[in-house]
Image (cartoon, rainbow, N blue to C red):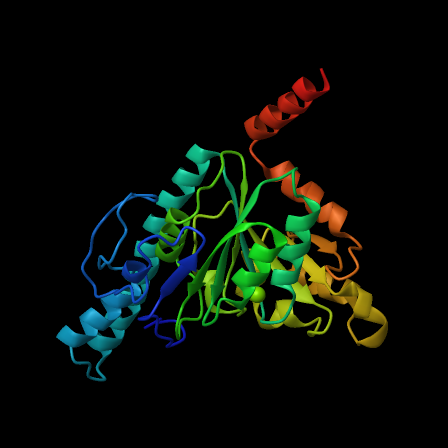
Length: 303
Ligand code: MG
C-alpha cells in the first residue's frame, strides 16, 4: 500500500527487449524480505524483496490498528520509513547513473499530456546524436513501450498494477534489463499522475513535468508538490492553443510562484515547434565527457 494515497503495488511486472528470464520477473513478488543489491546485478530472477510498500503490509499484519493516538503516530513514522527506504535506493541508482555517465530524466505529468509523444519525437529527431533508452511506467499494457520501440529506442515497460507511481526499486530492476550506453540519456516515463510520483525519488538527474494546454493553467497551484520538485516544465500541445482556453503566461506565473527556479519550454510534439530548445536542454545535461567523446569521434570521422 502507498501510505500517501492508499494505492497498492503488489503486482509489479517488467517487460522489455532484454527480457531474459521473463517468468521470473513477471509476477515479481514484493513480500517484504529485505535484500540488498546494486543496479544491474546479474541474477534478478524470481527473488523477493522489500521495496518499501510491502513493509506496510507486513507491518499491518503484525499490528492490528486501533484508533489510538499511538497508532496514528506509528502510521506517520511508517510513511517516513517508506520514503526513507526509497531514498536510499534512489541514492544508489543515482550513484550508478553517475558512474555510467547516464543522464536520467524522471518525466511526470497527468495522463494524456503527451509524455510518450514527446519521447517518440525526441528519439526520432536525436537518432544518431543522443543515445536514448526508456523505462515506461503504466498501471497496465505495453502500449507505450511498443510505441517507443517503434520509434527506435530500447525500452522496458514497468506495469505497476494498482500502483500510482514508479519507485526507486522498480527503476533499479528496470535498468537491469537495459544495456545503457555510457554517456546516454535514460528517460523514465512515470505513471500518469500529478500526485504520488512527486514523492518518490528515483535517482534521476532531473525532473521534468509536462502540462498540456488541454489541461487547466491552474495545475501548478492545485498540485504544488509536483511543480516544486521539477527542474523543467514542458507546456505541450501548443498547436492547440487557438482552440482551448489556456493562458500560457498564467500557467508559467503559477508554476514560478510554486518554484521560482523552474525552467519552462513551450512546445508541440505534434508539429515539432519548440522541440529544438528541449533537445538543447537535454544535450546540455549529458555528462561532458560523453559529449567530448562523441565530438572527438565526429572529428576523427571528418579527418
Ligand atoms: Mg505514456
